[in-house]
Length: 469
Image (cartoon, rainbow, N blue to C red; front, side, top):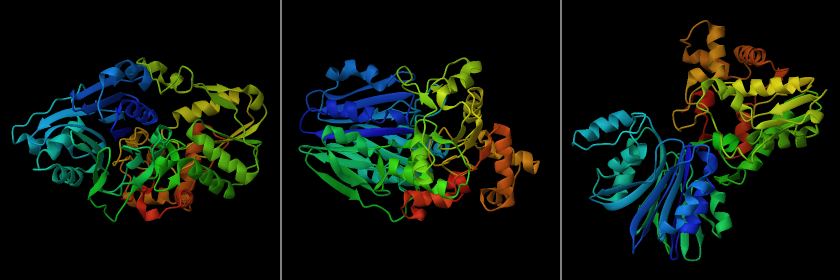
């Protein structure tokens, strides 16, 4: 995944840029960068590897060297960015949140003009560099940005830093958010709305699908009006969004309370306590407990002082062990208890199975599992979500293959497994329950999850659950 932040100010932008970017750290674990522009020193940038290291510790010593009034920053799971570009548009810096499924096709087309790209260490092309190349195919920024949005298959939102201001563009289907903030003598743009609140900004507007805008310290202007259709990712509320974040007017924490309440209304299990898998499962569990009357408890605690991000060692044999190292059990709250545990989702099932096993080892009598979203049946093809990109990593698909006896499961059969009222759905859920050793398993329904968000269901992407585009 990834997130970005941009600011245009009459004063130095560095302080706001540093903390605004840092507030997106939950969205990425590999790379981070900042680029600034000032009339005196021109462009400057800094990019660091932030694997296993907080953003702040990598960049705080460089702040004095990044001076300017305009700046953009990003947190990324993939390519190093922002990148600096010099073209017929002049010099500019660009950062993106994107998934480009037709990158090879685009590269081959652009390479006909003898343009070259720098390959990353994994042999792939930097997606942000590819977007910059698309923009450079047109005579002006507005046409170039629109061309990039229209050309890529997947999703693309971006910020572009120029000497005259910052361009902001939201994905043409609105799959990821871009929110504008304003305070005296400054505007900013962010993926996460809460990222600018402590910096003195107030909500100004949220860009619509395909909207392109430009702003400086004093003004904001829409250059391309938003489209009518939107498919914002529902997983932003269920899992990826920070509790304080607001998308399309709906707060993440409140949505999770609503989600838990919907689940409780359909359930009849008699558990002693309700608990959430930290962090995202906690709010769902609060909503469930409030609705059901079953007490909320924290039978295991997430240890955070030395685990600021999802550290994974290079030793493959230890990866599964590390996955549960952050969760410390509270034996006094587990022993002889019937626990109802809510997680945001089940992907591979490995970590939740191990969590369940250590609850049993700590004396739990029963462990009932309630994922806050429906079974994941399709790998996401619109966003770089490491949770569900590969369908064959999904426990649901592996179970379906076992039940059907073939790897080639027809689309119409998959739709039966997506229907919570079908016999095949019940068979799949029971097979997953047995495989992961849960006392009981009940997924949230898609209609209830969408109702928990509360906006028009047609505006939300549900592809990973039902395969519908």
